[in-house]
Length: 277
Image (cartoon, rainbow, N blue to C red; front, side, top):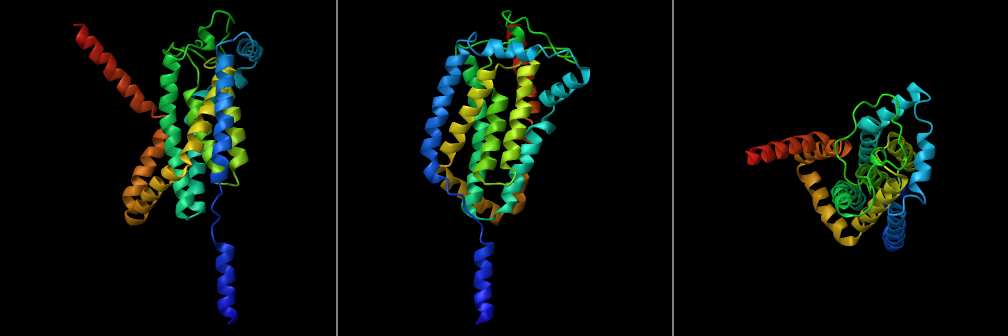
């Protein structure tokens, strides 16, 4: 009898916690929409917020080669942003084997990647502003170690990097990971490098984080989570195939599919040159 009682007590203690996120979906969605609208208003009025703050941050550039190069490294290399966050996502996955818990992580991570593509579309269609180093109004001074400017000269609102990586940080928060606060702080610090580098204005980061929040909380609705359970079931039936696909997708998220986008851009350019002849 004692053994049975102890076994039941042990099972209760070890039972995985399922985050109660359903009651928070609508309030967080509304807050995210409000923040995105506010960020867009700031983006179309750059003299109010973006240019003064970017000019103040840019005044530090060039004072320390070591600091400038560290910022450039944080901007360029996915180890300092995507790789750490994706590693934490995997930690959340193996920390709790509950099907609903895992499905929320899965749909959240996929939503982060998908909304990154949406943010790039919004950069092209929203009437906002060019990147700071292309904005003659602030006379941007490049940090040490920056040789070549990016080729993309279209508008920068919202930041697709921030959308994806802040989305991952929110997923880690939704999973109630013990690393959630660290993930949020890391993402904020690393993504601030985009302002220092001149790739984005502050409103781009704010709008990107709000857009990511909208996508992640929408993905926590019952329908996406139920679809996520199907994939979780696939993990149980065919773990080798599931984790092969999971690793590949995780790599693409961590690097923002940089190599695939480069190949696609090269082929598109080659196709355009061929048609020109």
